Length: 240
Image 1: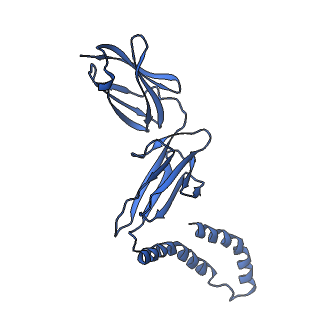
Image 2 (image 1 turned 30 degrees about the vertical axis):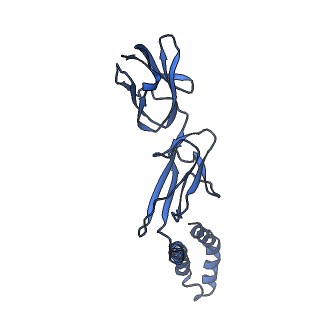
Image 3 (image 1 turned 180 degrees about the vertical axis):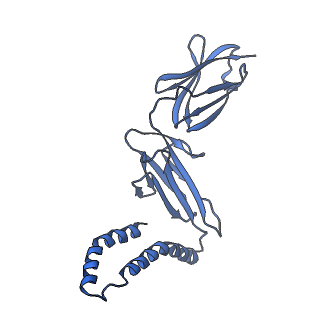
């Protein structure tokens, strides 16, 4: 793509001169557009032949196409190993014999929440690529960002079971990824259990095993807050 864009830019620079040349000499540059298109075709197809040559020489499995993107356009840039990517959407080909390291770098006004799927909440991650000896594979990873908009007042939160003994299931929908703070407090306001929830846009389901916290029977409150402001609170009962 970089070579093709360079060809495109040079074509724009040279096009006026080519027209003057053609106007002056009838048989001059008659196949110019066709030859430029041949250069584009060569630039587009050559990388695949290069990868095939490397595979054959070094007996490597087929390549993996790595696709990086963010849920909000222009929310970040990426580092891929030593490569600096100055956009929030990128793809590249790697041989899946060596792990790669990717770093998400948020721009001003955006907060990194987590990676898609199960790649965690650290900005820098290192991972193995899928291997298929015969076919090209694809791995897509999305960086999820909070746009700092307030929580939608119509968001529905569900806590179950209630009453409970040793577990807690929390389900809700968000319009955008967020980091929420969960606290379970007793009637005196003492925090018994707390956790940060790294949430995706859309449906979120969190399951908590509370058997080790040994809640005494009685009433407790489950509170959710975003940037220090409560967004949801409900009372739950713990039984023996």
